[in-house]
Amino acid sequence: MQTAFVGARVFDGHALQDGAVLVIDGPHVVGLTASVPERAAVITVHGGILAPGLIDLQVNGGGGLMVDGQSDAGVLRAICAAHLRLGTTGVLPTLITDTPQATKAVIEAAIAAADAPGCLGLHLEGPHLDKRRKGAHDPALIREMTEVDLDLLIAASQRLPRLMVTLAPAAVRPDQIRALTEAGVIVSLGHSDCTHEEATAAIAAGACCATHLFNAMSQMGNREPGLVGAVLTHDIAAGLIADLIHVAPAMLRIALSVRQDGLFLVSDCMAAAGTDQTEFRLGGRQILRRDGRLTLADGTLAGADLTLPQAIANVVRRIGIAPERALAMATHIPAQVIGRQDLGVLSPGARADIVHLGDDFGLRAVWQSGQKRL
Image (cartoon, rainbow, N blue to C red; front, side, top):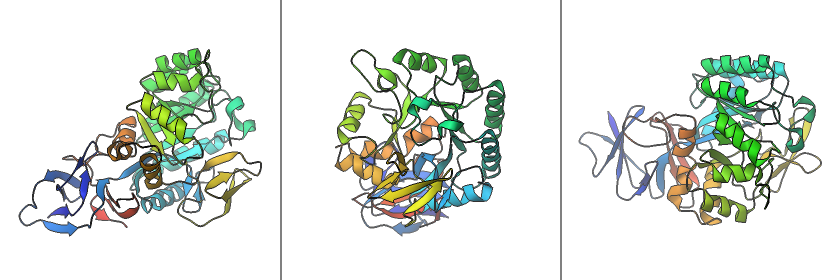
């Protein structure tokens, strides 16, 4: 039986529509209509916005759990389930720099969890980074990519729904980037002190994304544009942490003015997401949760205390971005980055992942594959 949603504006992935009726049939979207189809069940929501389920490509943990070398498929499923309750219906669990053994273990866990609702694959943020821009990553574990590493990632990409790898030109050669890209890996540049020229060479080799723009990367100067300048002047995607802490509002406004598309929102959240935890462990180090910040003991930012609905609200209210664009940054743009045309939109045949947001973008309800989850 078809189900019709009425009573809210509908964001279809591209535009907001007033008075539209969203119709689904089981796990798939039928489309938007002007009236309720005959014999359809009706779900009435009261105001706000119905939008595609939110998609987060950088999730380090949630529900009190971290993605680490001890994570099995059950842990990854639980993290995805925790984010479902926060409005995110599609997640790339993210392992930050760790040992080769931990990397292999998490790859196998992600393969085993690939059938879980909301598990879109895996994001490996490291270990092939630049120690000069390590952020909260353990510098002792950062290393250059070997041929063994390359073979492991190429093999993993054939077994995972999607594999994103954050790397730095200082640790990876252009021919290795090219090989990863040809194998279907989504190569993202980050944690790098590279020059604009080095970044441009990596983009030419196939890098198509940048990880948390502005953070842990070479900044834009008048004579050396750095990685930030390369991202802003090339047609590649880039994630943004819009907690108004990682990136100053003025810098967010500049980036969103220069780049009219390709920028998307990420939470970069940790184990504390969806909990009231005030501290937890990251690779044996204590992480403190204070005043909306997650930090190491020395004050270094260690992920973000953020949800995607909060990020949407921030860029609309504080940055002045149109609601349609902010919603797209958490739905169809990240879906495009990972090549999932069935996600991030409410068009015929798409998966019926839906969120109901209030006019303040607060989360009210979640449906995944047509089933109400919150």
